Length: 516
Image (cartoon, rainbow, N blue to C red; front, top):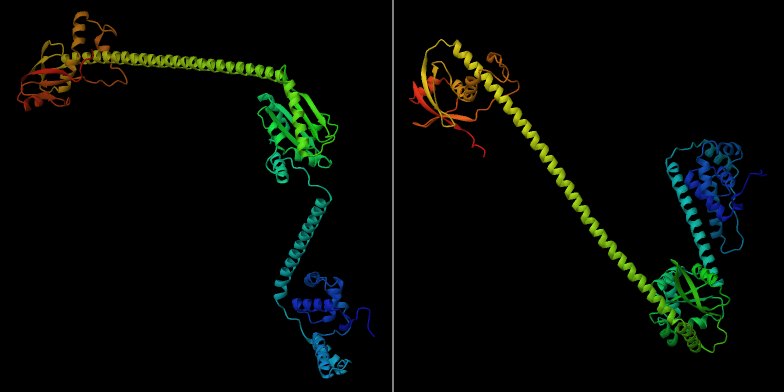
């Protein structure tokens, strides 16, 4: 007798048997009864059963509850083999006999199954995530395909039940009209109604507004009339701006509300007037509904006459408005020209002012630089003058302290053309000769005043600090031509080398050209 969880393989359906074989192949589980329990707990879903099998702690209660002898996979194969052999040996008979196992087989097989130890394998661990991902991907693809299919069904049903929503694209509106009636039609304005109004106001034209409803019975006749030569020739003139639309569009619906349309199709002749700086619409003529029309050609002629009547009545108004607009345009252009001239003049004045300021700034900087140079020159001259006085004081002191014989005689011709004769000791250097020449004006001033700019005592005149004197002349012997530059050389040796000792005539030559 079987328990509540017992089963027979013959009781399983083909789908359940296939699920059982797939589960056993993936998990390598040989306990068929345990495999059936796992599959039953997951409603025979192989992916969920495999996930439960490898989840720790979920398979243990089912394994512990399996107390009856499991139906092994060998028994399943044996039964299938016996059924096939019996079917083949039946000689085409209608009865099928099952091969009954011997009483010893269940016990031996139970021992074999109980004694067999499970073998560890990496294949289940590697295969069940792949199967899980495949299952998730399959589920997502099925959901997407279902949604796409429902959307297609809904769109198809909507198209068959009602007309497509009106497109707000004006070029799309013209293309749809041309696909239905051809390319010969009245010249539709492809912009919005507000743009059409602005164009009619700016160019002083009549605005022809046409509105219809796709649900109205007269709409096809009205649309067909828009392709007739009489109406096309009338509205193709440069004095009209034609704007048309289906009231299913928001722009056309607002136009119908603003014009208080009573019936469709509708045609209105609008004149855009401007007063006190504001623009407004003046409805010159309107036609709500068609009334009775035999055909599209007759309707087109009637619409052309409908357009011509208000145009003829308001021609003078249009011309006056156009002249007024031309005057305003001329005045605007004149103001723009005046403003442009003023801007150019202002730019020139600003450029002159900028150039004047730059010139003043440049002159100011040059003046400051010149004053700085002058102050520096004055300071340098003052330092040079103090240095000469100090050097003259040293010469006077050396003459008083000198006990050597003066053995060298020099005749010096100065820069001013005067000639000075002086004598120097044998130990004197060329530096002393240079200092003697540099202090000649100081010696003349001392001889006249016997005082200095820094006090009456010449010996107290000190050398200036941070000053290095530059000699701006050279001592030259004319015959032979010798330039004496080494001021540290001994005077006797330098002259003797040129055969000029003990007496020589030297010329003081300036190193720089005198400034004018």
